[in-house]
Length: 239
Image 1 (spheres, helix red, strand yellow):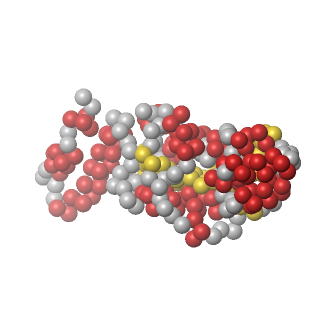
Image 2 (cartoon, one colour):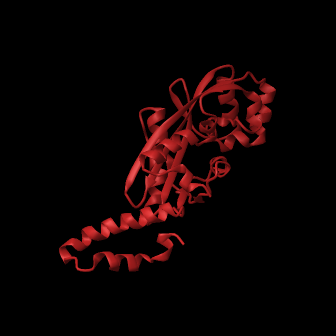
Image 3 (cartoon, rainbow, N blue to C red):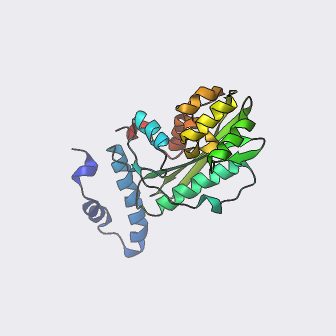
């Protein structure tokens, strides 16, 4: 049986704090918290939380061997203002993860946010079918960048790390009739940039330069780097 499962947290605290002076107790408890966390991670039971309602992000993580608990932040995205699309999606990812992390005592929280950058402007989810039509008429035949902000928080350690992934998207040239049909499907209303890569929108994407997962909303290579900087091996999180 793994060490962390044999000893309760209370027993471990009592064993390690015997004969210590009261002035050392606070510092000792902090050290013990980290020891318990480390032992728990070695046993592969770290709580992983996805601070996103995106089915695509959840599917990517599950397909890659993870099984996160989903907690939606409910954060008001309109409250965030930034001077560039990169800073905007990064700030939104950090805000979503932070809101959820504050409700937890332990675990690893992942927050993400995606925008499409076209001509230096950030585009999130369109507000109406008409907006979908207008956007696609402006996008067709051109290149844009799908930016996804990633934030990972180690709740126990209080560490926050974030980065932005960028993938170039080469849009096809759908006809006006195809654009209208796509807008009427409702799919582009649910996603940043008004398109999907793995759904109906895939018919109108000529190609991408960069990470496929980043366009779906979460980049596995980027996420692995962030985990590594926090000292977490992705293989320890496999279910």
